[in-house]
Image (tube, rainbow, N blue to C red; front, top):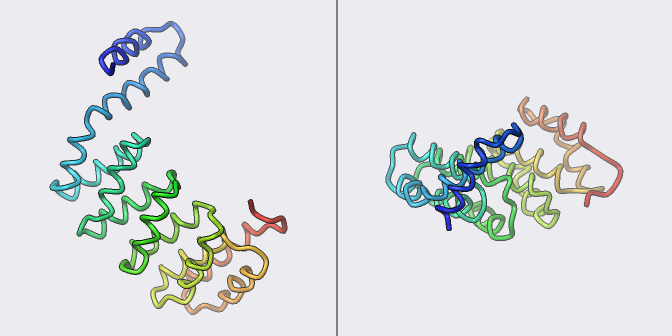
Length: 192
């Protein structure tokens, strides 16, 4: 079937309409990428850092079940840079399985990876995660506290904002900047 799809897309690449040609080009790229899933998988398993990062970015662009499975695989890499990139790349895919995998990483991560986890969990908009993110508002690492403020502001309501406001006196400027940004996003209506 994939050969027939590629053949049809090949014809659409010559369509008189620019919109059709553009859509066909994007679809052709994604279709070819799907053929390369196993190649990306082997890069994530044993490639250099650069190859792994390229595979992560390609998987994010690919999306769908194939891309998400590659990104989930990258979460177990021993290199924090790879795990952190995979976490950020998963942000547009907040399915229950992805959220569960990210949430399970929280206790064993630190630094940039932990910050990326909090940022991605906050971007999911899943309010049930607010109590878990709240725990990181007092984290010893300023970068993690700043990401926790941003994430928590996206998940909390009413009383939660008091916890964000109380961070205006944080000794770290990046945390205070995150608080200021969060306050700019406040709305009086309940978040859905």
